[in-house]
Image (cartoon, rainbow, N blue to C red):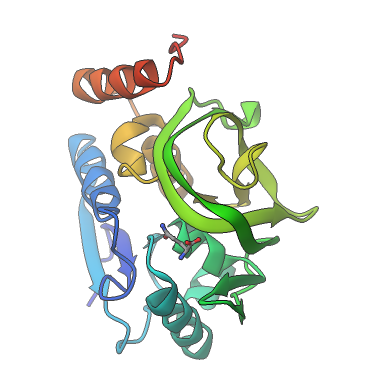
Length: 240
Ligand code: GLN
């Protein structure tokens, strides 16, 4: 199944978790790796299939409550994602996928067990968070402002083992103060957009984690324009 020399990107459960165009994250990663001459193999794993353990990057995306709860149950029973994380795989998870990585989340009024891979737990906010999201990224990650679009009812609380991905400048994110979380090679965010089209430096960080290589910059004129437009729409200036 696997091409040994290729960077293996696994899109987890597109049949349950792909509501908000987050498949774009897969396309962006594959494109940016290809532009550096890195051979890429992408695999889409549906929820009736086992999650392969030999991938390099796993992507989990947004979803409505019912498919989100089903995805969490299937992933826990399958165990493949946990084994992949144990071998050091990179995981990038958005919104429902981010909540699933945590200890627990609330869907359709019920508390559901997460995979307990990231030290976060999610409950429900008084209102749905919908709109532009921008945040100053954790300086240790060396990334520019996070830009995205959020659409979620959940609120996420970080434990001591998880670091916030960003401090919220516009929008809600986890709780109005922080947005997303990361720990080791696991990174979760509420940013749709898709996130990696709006944040190409974040895409490159994930590729660097997975390959262990420093990657040469690309000509990002189109994503720079997209970022500038979306950040200007909410009154945030991009600092070069
Ligand atoms: N169902 C979750 C919530 O509303 C996640 C939504 C999403 O993935 N956009 O919080």
